[in-house]
Image 1: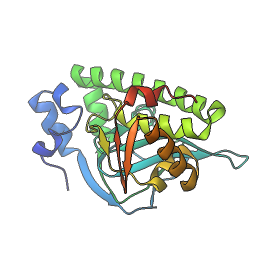
Image 2: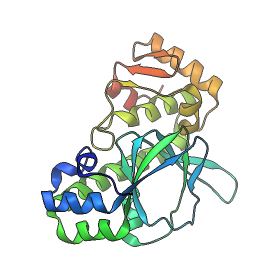
Image 3: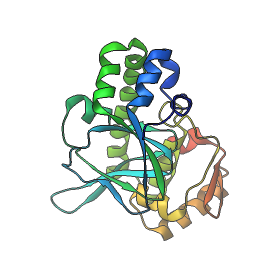
Image 4: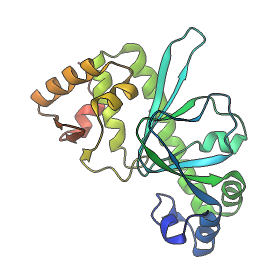
Length: 224
């Protein structure tokens, strides 16, 4: 069943669309629910939807031919991703896994392409989105190759405070140590130790299932 226009109006791209475009977008978007641990798609699967997280947390990752796991990004409530694969009409080059129970919005490719071909506002949004996403992925490669585990935890946490990609995030994010470890590619004990040290440094406060970030810019540049 398609989402309502009111629901579509809450998305990060809705403000760029005319009333007619928004109605068309709502008709072409459905809601689906995925339980924790479920694969939304595997690498090389064809997923003919542009995807948004209505509520939950998704890990975008892959495993190399040598068996090395790498997380490209986390997608939290309010974020949309996968526009590159939809534009190129190609299989996904990564796995999508729900790391908590997640409710998603799925826009049909036909609707996405109609907006791409007819809406100037939608194209302005896509340019901003793709630019931010490229910067994020380049940074992820740097994190994985050269950063100490604590710095990887800090910078992965800072992802969620990018106002373009994750506009729904405030200074507080509900995320468990297990979930943050899955995103950063480190164990839960490493996350626990890193959060304690970052808290001692005055950059955040950590509680059960919740982290309040006090210095997001410092986390984004953390390299100790």
